[in-house]
Length: 389
Image (tube, rainbow, N blue to C red; front, side, top):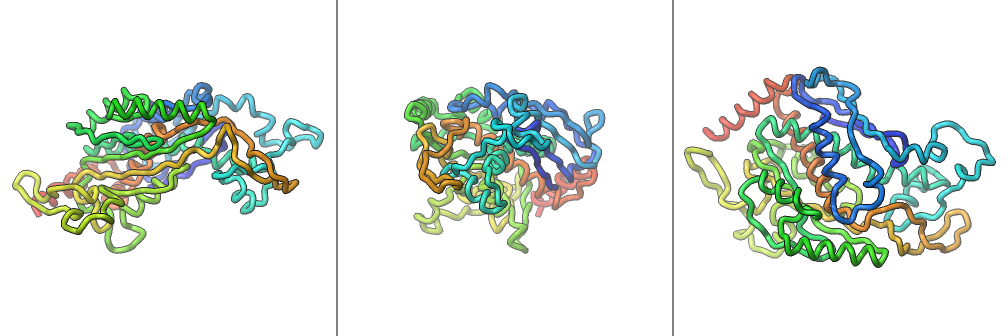
């Protein structure tokens, strides 16, 4: 199972082509639009979210509410395109059109601008920033929404929440189910289940915004219901935790990932890190703790999968850092593009959906997945096998 995305931040649309969804799986535009709306929420978002009301158009691969087994084409139009038709248009423009010919020559620290220009030889770095923009995560979420639908139909639930913003850490709060976690985070402007910490997080975001600055944080994704033994220990590139780590770090501005207790494991003895194995007649094998986050040896253990990602502060600042003009080589304050002061709550939704994609892809890779009904039977058979092993 794989997907490709295309499109620029201020282009006419963003597109995703998904290949590998089993035939006969229920999937509606509404399933995807729910996730797109969640991505646009969150305290600290900028004016772009007031302009765009993202909805998907399904352009292929689905008929009468069911997948066909052929590639699924998803399109999300950019409402802001009408203001950028000349600047971002595909047709050649006149040499004397000053509005269109105005180039971006001042790379912003922390962005792909300069590195992308060096790679592709662009003297106008708008050619870089338009594609490297986090706007592209819109269709990554759309693809993830299709994966979430597949997981839910297989009895696998997934949710995310924010555990830190700008140095404000949430206290660990117990919740009875994934559904409760979803309900509580949907009610929080920063997607945090610790109400006291949430208030402090919002104040930290306000302070950063007033200072023309930005702040980052940490998000956590939890998935329950994955059958044991998904992934592989045989080859490095088939290890599921490696795939999940790559997916999370591939999100714009994410710079770190951990599973279970993560980096805390470096400060503990092995007896306080590894999860003891137990067995009972109802559930079969299980772990008494889940400090390794539901993954051992590159495979699922059947315990909840717990993945955390670290998001750096957004590098577009309203008190811009110094840079160098690539034409004049003179120092300047980096150019300012419209941006958020904090996108951590929204990034939690992106992380949730990229994790969902990797889990769904691992299942499709491992089980018979041409038809959804046989995929479900195969996954249920694996669960029964693991219980009785």
